[in-house]
Length: 458
Image 1 (cartoon, rainbow, N blue to C red):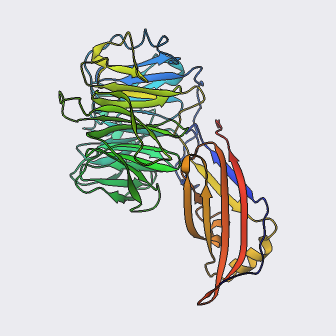
Image 2: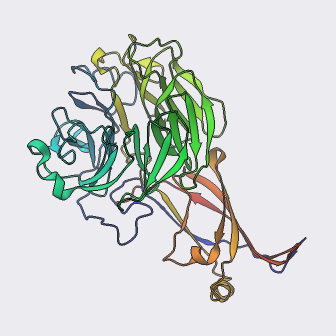
Image 3: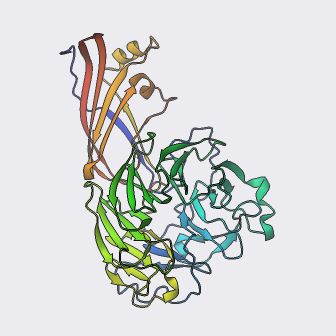
C-alpha cells in the first residue's frame, strides 16, 4: 500500500547544458581534469562534408543538394578504409599518409591543413582519433593502446616530441581496437573480441568493460538520442545505455557487418552495411535508415552497395561504398563528379552550427519549496533513494534509482542523461521511505516538463 504524506507538484529548477562545440570541459570531467584554454578559432561559415582517403583529405563546402556536390571530390589517388575523421568543433583531424595526422581548420573547407603529431613513436599508422578541449585521443589498432596528446603538437620525423607530451591512458591487451568514439564525457572503444570499453578520457588505467558481444567484432560506434549505438561485424546494431554495464540490446540485424553508424539528431540512425572483405558481393549490402524509436524498422536508402561510411546531415545521409557503383551518395543520389578512388572514403558532415554529437547534457535538479526538508533528511548521512523517470522525443526512456542526497550535492555526480535531442521532456522524481515491509510512504513526488534546445557554446 502507498500512503502519500505529501505530494508536491511544482516546476523544479533544472539546469541544462548542451555543448554542441567541444571547446569546453567534457561532461564527466571534474575541475581537476587537465582542461586547456584555447582560442576557439574562426567559426565555420557554411555546412561542410569531409572525406579522407589514404593520400588526401578534402572538404566540400555547402553540400546541401546533389547539384552543389557536382564539383566535389574529383581528384584523389588511393583509398583507406581504416582511418576515421575526428573534430573538436574548430579543426578536423585525420591520418596523414607518411606519419602523424592532418589538422585542418573547419572554416578553411579543406585548405590550411598542417601536419601534427599522431602519437608516440611507431604510431604513425594510428587509425582512430577523437578530439576535444585541445587534445587528440589516439587509438592504435594493432598496439591496442589509447593515448592522449596535445592536438597542436607539431609533426616531426618519427614524432620525436610525442613521448614526453603524450600520455598512455590504457590498453586492451593484444586484441586491438576496431572503433573509437568520444561522447557523453567518455571515450568508448570497440574491440575484435566483442568488448565495448568505457574510459575516463583524463585518467590513466580507468577503462572498464561496458558490455560484451562475444565473438563479434565491434566495428562502429555512434551516440545520439540518449544512447550509445554499436555496429557488429555479425550484422547486428546494438543500442546501449552509455553509463550502465551490460545494458546493450539488439536493435536490428542486417546481412553483413555494420561498418559505420551516424545519428542525425532528429530521430534517425544511419548505417553502412557491408563486408570487411574487399571485392565481396554487394547483394546484402546497403545504406540503412533506422528510426531510433522503433526496433527492427531499418530500411534501405541505397540497396545493393557495399556500405563503407555514413555521415548524417542536410536532412539526409552522405555515404561511401566499395562497389563498382558511384562511390559517394547523397541520400539515394550519386555524386555526379566524384572520382572512383573515393570509394571506401571515411566521411564526416559538419553543420555550420557546429558538429552534431559533441558534448552532453547535464541535469541538476533542485527542489526550491522542499529544500529544508531534504536538507534535514540528508543530514543523517543515510541514503535516501528516489526513482527518476525521464521520457522524451523519439521514444527516449530513462529510469534510475538514485540517492537524492548525492544528486543535490554539487561535489557528487549529477544525473547524466547522455546526448539528448532537442524537444520536450517529462521528468518525474519520486522520493520514498519504506516505513514497514508492506508499506511505502511517498515523501515527495515532483513532475515537471523541460524543453531542451540545442545551443552552440563559445
